[in-house]
Length: 480
Image 1 (spheres, rainbow, N blue to C red):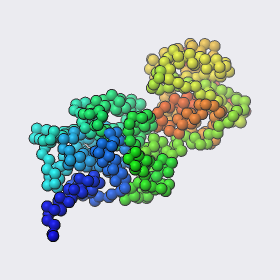
Image 2: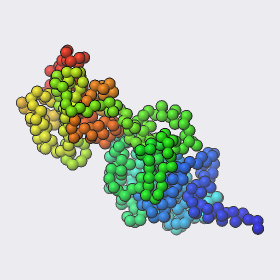
Image 3: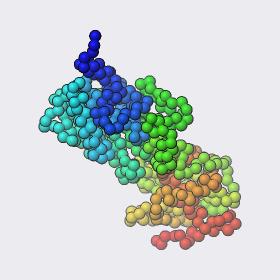
Image 4: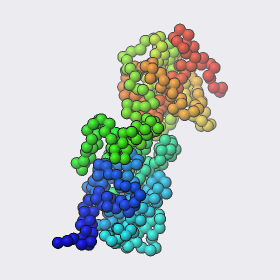
């Protein structure tokens, strides 16, 4: 018996209904007719996890995957259209760091479901009064809405999709980065139709230790994590609860060689630099083994020789139990010309407790340790510095208005660490100190680095060798 055109359509419909990956393959020419489909195993992985959401196995899914791997098309165009095949009443809210990006994929989905190919197989009628580029609705009450992450108000959805909720610039901004986290915490949970069954899908590349992904991974918020680095790192092999695991076995094995072959990856790695490549391609907020600081060259010693000069430098903050930390790094230069970090005191304290800790630390260090404090800009920073100076009457203390970026201030210390000229005296603080160095400048906290940079820059000023070391503190005192 010869199959008719209707028979072929019915077979195709059934194959697409059973498999999101098959649906994508069939629908691809409708959305991207000028771009031949290149399929990689990672696309099967993403489809498999999205199907798990559809089947109710997952309600929270975080996908970290490099740009250019069809993540937006799969998650934000094809999957929502595929769900409408069997449940057109599904309500979808899509958001990105810019509304125009959310509109782009909303428009693509509308173009797909109104295409001749889709309509012949699954006719879905859009209502005339709710058919705009930012939002459209069908006659089964399902809808698709495009929003910016920062304005996640309005309707509630069965599916809330965040596609790139932070851009590169915002992720490194101390002002902008927390805004997306606040929306994630305070607004996103209120945008779900059913708090128990509605699903949230977040797809992005890693940019900073404290980006949206970093916040999700910092605690158990119920998210399944599908992490797909461009180059395979065996120690970070991804496994998920639905029984999936990264199929790669060889160190450096590529994610998507059909589109990003080795020569392209190496070319882009060179152009992007180690930090950008680590975050956007490897899904780590810092290069493997660190990047800014060559931390592996720091020796931890049980004791240090006699120190020629010693400084305790404080990077102050004033929030108890959250936010930035206060850190005081004690550093000295030994008779061997090596810089020794002998102690770190850190914590999240309100101003009164902070000042008490600083005073207590000074008394423990003794009067031979010179104290420096970083003075923040503005009148508030100056008043805070003066308050600390008054609190430390009897000790040698000076304030320093800071200028330039944290990276620029840390560069001299980084050079000496790379040369093997910086060592730590063994202590409980060692691990957290090195962990911060590993991720800097994409680390959640930077206070220990700031304080270390300040201490080092004070010790090294005018120094060439132990015999002629001079510390011209007097020339650096800020007029009070």
